[in-house]
Image (cartoon, rainbow, N blue to C red; front, top):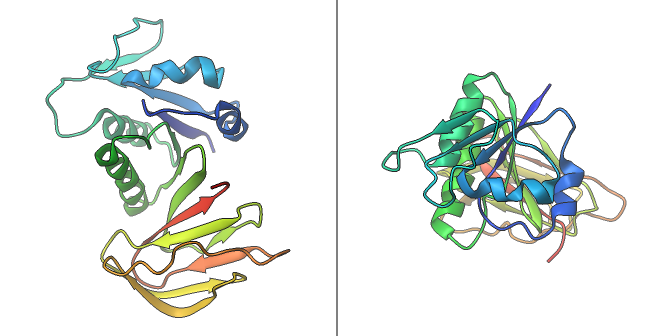
Length: 208
């Protein structure tokens, strides 16, 4: 299954780490100033989307969708919706977490949108990777020193954590009390996380 990679304009400090996660057949979409990452990623864009308020339209020989500056969807949200229309089921978002907390939180909510329509989305930054846990059990390899579970939507119930330093059985996490921070995978094990009702944001932390 081909995957769509969405590249935003937030800083990427470790291009080598991101390049290791890319596949040859990924469909790469650059959002506005995300085009500045092409050299570091050593890739060419398959689609460029943006209103070009933070970067000039490069006028490359690449399919380009020019958006109005005044709109409800951010460039990144529009790009994701466009890729969904084109039939992509799996998404990797890079360059979407940075100094603008409002943009970062908005981009994290894209994971909820993708989960709601039955697609899988992952956000990767220089330190971690994030995905939503809802109907499917998620696993964490011991190559990640830490992992956290955050409730970002309503109440999450029936939470189970296995093979971790802090296990949990039939737990509940609300948005008001986030006690699922900084867990650890047991040595030689693969941690498992599941939730019976609701959604959780799983953050696998590669380095602090």
